Image (cartoon, rainbow, N blue to C red; front, side):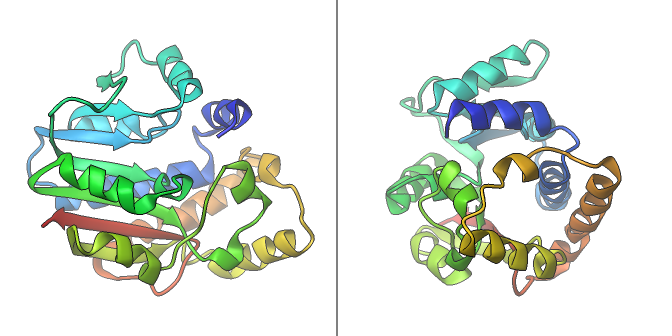
Length: 239
């Protein structure tokens, strides 16, 4: 992604309804599904480090991003953080849990990166992936973020199921879908540039309402696979 995108995410992610809600959902899910608190974790494609504070509570956290601009932002705020910044992934270290949170949609050869991550996971280790859903919602925002594609459960399963046993596979950002999807289609049809608007917190009351609505899905995902949503949530075990 462009440096301006990283800068905006670094400045705006804290208390932004989307970033905070995704964090709440993942935190709640991991609390319920991880028994060992001393595991080795890799946040692959960590960006500006939105999730590192939360993830560091679950074990020994390492983070990696191949974009130098992202790492510069992380290092600005990393003095008291309990994680290790990796310059490469060439070591033989394997992890109990790898997270790729809104990452693989940026990668041209998504099959290749899934195969690589599979090799970096220990026996019976886990992977947690989130991606944006539905190519018909591909807008100017996706282009600015350098997305190669969006996914459905079917297209995502094609690159995962040979490598992982599925433990949870659900859409999410489900409740707000009837509001967000038509807006995205409108922006797509009229080629509206809107990334600045949606990645900034904006009105505090609206931001709080959206955060409460989206965060509520942490309870739904615990026992349901939601039938549609703006994004997809996958949790699997290495075969």
